[in-house]
Image 1: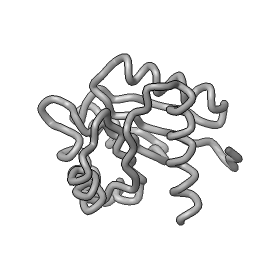
Image 2: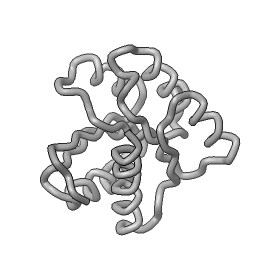
Image 3: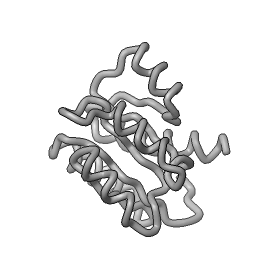
Length: 135
């Protein structure tokens, strides 16, 4: 992937192992990419209120206890400052109905968590490139 500037990603995922795998995958994609993590919606929204600069992309797990990914997406899209940040739903299982609903709610992409490290890197790269190419 050719990157013309530093890319900041926020991953919102309640699973510590998934966060570690994702951040490792991003780190190995290149020094121009950086990933911050939040373990849930409340933590993510608090982070987004104070971080500068804002992330370029948000990868959001759909299936989290309590304040789930759907509610988080709704909150993100309701905050004017955050509305233009691409949100990629990133979850273990996504039904076709959930995928359609997430896209209607403002998600920019929906991907299933790959089980393989290389596939994860390819999915992250593909999501970012797809958005950059469709601007």
